[in-house]
Amino acid sequence: MTTEDTVSNGNETKQPGGLFLLFFVEMWERFSYYGMRCLLVLYMVKALQFSTEKAGHIYGWYTGMVYLTPLIGGWIADRYLGQRKAIVIGGTLMALGHFAMAFNSMAFFFSALMLLILGNGFFKPNISTVVGSLYHEDDPRRDGGFTIFYMGINLGALFSSFVCGTLGEKVSFHLGFAAAGVGMVLGLTLYLLLQKKLLGDHCMKPSTPAKDYKAPIAIIATLIFVLVISAMHFCGYSVIDRIPRSVYYIGACAAVVAVVWGYITAQKKAGLTRAEKEKMGVVLLLTFFSIFFWAAFEQAGSSLTLFAEYETNRVFTLFGHTWTMPTSYFQSVNPLFIILLAPLFSEMWIKLARRGKEPSTPIKFVTGLGLLSIGFMVMIAAASVAQKSGIRVSMLWLVGAYMLHTMGELCLSPVGLSMVTKLAPAQFASLLMGTWFLSSCAANFVGGILAGNYDAINHAKFFAIPTSTALLSALVLLIMTPKIKKWMHGIH
Image (cartoon, rainbow, N blue to C red; front, side):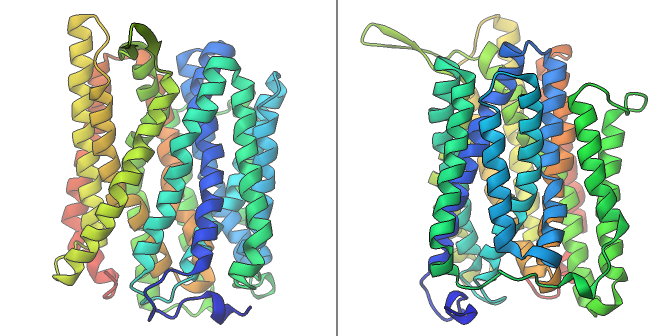
């Protein structure tokens, strides 16, 4: 099977078969990631007896590093491995990491986090790049294809909390973590069995071989930084205690973005035009604004989980029997709404496009940030009710907030993935996809710090922080939209 057989020509209406393979592989990978994530904070607080502050910081550092290493993994795939080999390496490392979590040992716990961080770096940017490569630049099915792919992500997240969460909370945390490992193995096995048939030789070779470029010292230094600082942080020997952590985290991620931009534009052999540089500038700019979205959104795994555990009424009485819903089940609310709403959003964008009224990518981002802010306004009200009444509040407050957050996510996340594949030059596709994930990296660092202060701040005031930051960033991006659209050079 040749590349031409696996890449669509833009004249068909049927999605390429390779998309559905990647759909199921990503579904199982996200099952493993979210299955572990829904238990992580509860495990640290309940089993390891970590303080809320320490658990929040470790959670933020782990989830942040998970989205920093895609920058490195994307660069290695572009230069040395090709995307397909990088996916196999990443899946293998993540499976080992999940199974390491199944052992009751602090050494295995921190080793598992390191394996998951490195494995995700190889896996995450490259599978998204392969999805984008299935379509030509002007293929009208591209955004729809990414919406389908995004549903795979959330299908895995949906049932992960029911399987891993139930096993973890009702039987053993370590059994829940092991179940996440089984999911990763299933996804990797499926990929190895069907990749050649459905993807052919596509993306097997690096897009820009290493012999054409010298490996930048900054990339190597970043890899060493990830390994050394992560190990020191996890083991409690942080070297950054003398300066505000938020300043350090944001500064570190901003430095990495600057390194990527400087490295790309400095390569004379790349032959980038002014239009290509401006398009990459859009990717970096929207990556920056995404930080404000994800820093608030990722409270789902930390502060919102604690709100569900301690301030939400989770007790049901059915036919005289009382049942308490596990806290981890709330992690399935967001992916459930994704699955229900994603087809509606996809159809909405298509209908608006036919009428010539589809919002541009920056406006979709503004809408996403606005909906996220409204969702946290709901949480301000919920926290106020809980504080004044002194009793647990209805779970409908959390469900309503999650619904609004999900609507915001659908305006930003799949749109962002599609945007990167449309604006990035082919020779830097995976590297810029890794750069896109830097928004989640920085956001999780900041979000972890915020979550670590959950017990120290009045909860209504706590939720006012993500409300205001999301709203303010939406207003700033709205003002900048005309300039950004100009830099996109006609790409919607």
